[in-house]
Image (cartoon, rainbow, N blue to C red):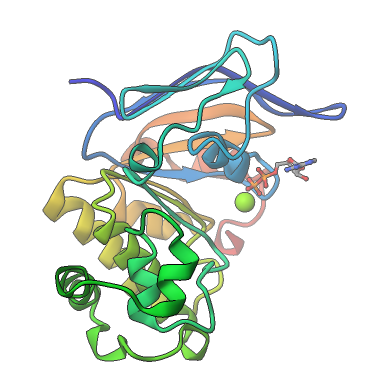
Length: 257
Ligand code: ADP
Ligand code: MG
């Protein structure tokens, strides 16, 4: 089976600091992978590489392939057409919704073609699009909030909107960068349950960076851990023992992780 993500020799340097150091891994279709590691380990930088928001060091032998398409090669980025980009859904820690637009519109932004802002502001959507967005909102449990402004939602509700947006995009790959870091424990649990469910039920591949290892153990089958920009661990989540975790986090007390 062709991997959904294929990365090799990926290095990224900011100034004198090598943030990613010759990273290589593959992710198969439908896998749920947790990306873990201490703050500053390079998790966000790596995820940004997978959507073309950042590029590998120029002149390096890096290769980044996502959904069968070479996104960057030797430091040159090809972001691809809009349709190609929509095959990847991206969920941020800080929600990234258009606060003054309503929930339904925020979901539909995932599907818009030309002049997305203009269409969103004018509410130009056909009945099919609206139905699709409402179905997606129902799957994440907030269809009753469709008409509400995004900036009135709780953090957990905002992340559900972001997941619904990935669903209307019909994203085959969902990348989520610390999606629960700003949420209370209950909202965090619910958002992780939804992410796991939309991955399991639809076969969508999930790569999610997480600070809390407990959630990784509960919802993901594999972990990739970064430490100081290097690949520290890549394997079944069950093999990420407490000993390994302690040295990943440089012997911080485990209950502080
Ligand atoms: P993580 O998400 O694991 O906390 P990041 O990928 O955000 O780590 O950052 C890794 C390191 O790279 C940090 O030291 C951060 O300060 C640095 N970094 C990230 N982006 C930039 C940038 N655009 N310019 C300079 N340094 C950056
Ligand atoms: Mg980060």
